[in-house]
Amino acid sequence: MIPRMSKFEIGDFDDNDFESATFPLANDGENTLEGRRWRIQHFLKEGARKPSELEILRNYINAFKAKHWKTEFLQEPAHGVFSLNSGGSEIWCRIRPAAGGAEAMSWKPSSAPA
Image 1: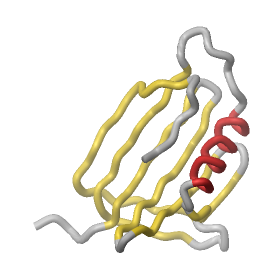
Image 2 (image 1 turned 120 degrees about the vertical axis):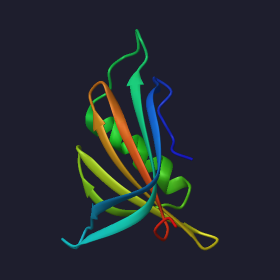
Image 3 (image 1 turned 180 degrees about the vertical axis):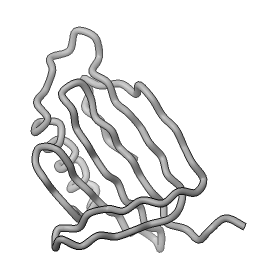
Image 4 (image 1 turned 90 degrees about the horizontal axis):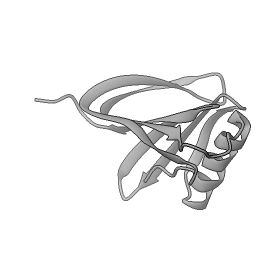
């Protein structure tokens, strides 16, 4: 679901059933979500050309746009927040590119665990 550039591989992953996060919004507001969180760190493959942070972020922007995600916040080249509403399910994703990789954190909002 979270696209990555072909020059990168998953370097770290974790999954929490319930966590909270606050996402910045384009109108200087913010949205706090609670729910399941996935964190994926992508690292540059050995020998691959190192892309700029802007190139990494634009790659994500184009991939999300092609899959009909909404851009909620964009601060090039350092940070992007995207959301997808599909079939009653909502997913939010924060992308933070770095010269050696990128971090993608996704939340699927839900109610507190029982």
